Length: 118
Image (cartoon, rainbow, N blue to C red; front, side, top):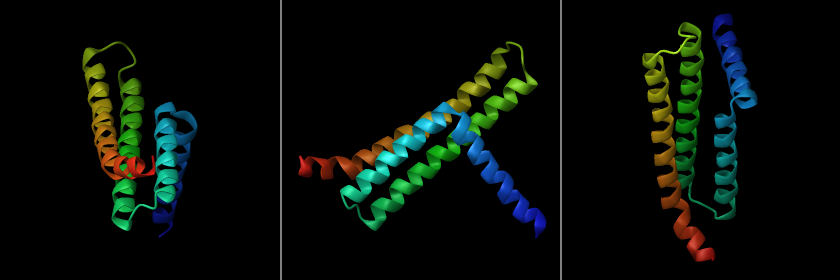
């Protein structure tokens, strides 16, 4: 049981490291804050909340994995290696794919509601 509890401690430590040191993670956090504000302001439905939160989680998880891949790649391949660059590009592409789909889903949820307000 102690090992399980420690794993949560390390996971929260990792989240804190991401939030304090990774600029792209901070940008995604700011975007999530805007989504939460809009969600309350526009009174989105429970299903829309679930979709928005799922998108938020997917983008944050992708960014966390991307950051880990970048750090690990830099450790094992400190010099210039096109293969290492390709690995990092692929991980970044995963974040981009998640972020694009989150933006599309956000548009589906928020654009009609914003058009009604304005």
